[in-house]
Image (cartoon, rainbow over all chains, first blue to last red; front, side, top):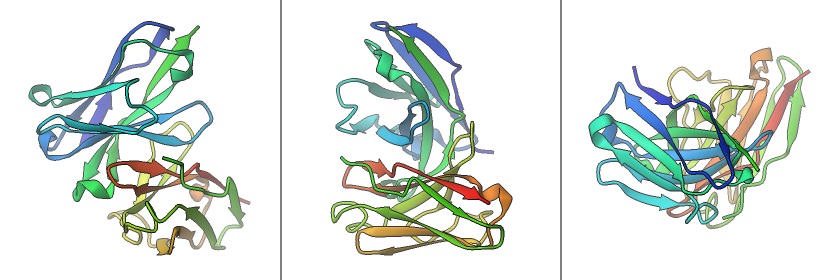
Length: 121
Length: 109
């Protein structure tokens, strides 16, 4: 069974760093891109960026470029989303989602359960 | 990259049909047949219901159908059921990026 299991909720202060994770199982992790999607409280979905775990190639939405870093570790089948300096406006639920080939089609067939990040000022 | 435009709300009675639109531009919806639709129940992760404009993943009822004309994609839910009440999001490839719509809250009256 394909699963994406994300790390637990986080409570941080503005200016702190954070890395959250998304562990894939039930499939060949390097074979499928992983995207990260933000959902701010009461708001819609926003695509942040994606990674190809086979070679760690990434690309980001212009809205998130330079503010977050996406990485992956093939050996542990885990993707990561990290911030070096959080802002209060980063408070949101973050989802990871798997791409189904053709990867560019943006077909996200499996999603993680979401990680709630709360940042206080 | 601007979000795709969806109506904030839609509604219908059980058994009726409702159509939700998703308007983009010639650089996303209009250029690629890579439009997906997701539904999201409160407190849950999104679920894929339509991909590549018209295709349904296995397990998704055929009450859900998708189409596209020009820069606008549409999702039709036929034979509305109580469990269809959810938020619906469209998404499109936009050339090395993906963009979501703002979401439509579907209410089953």
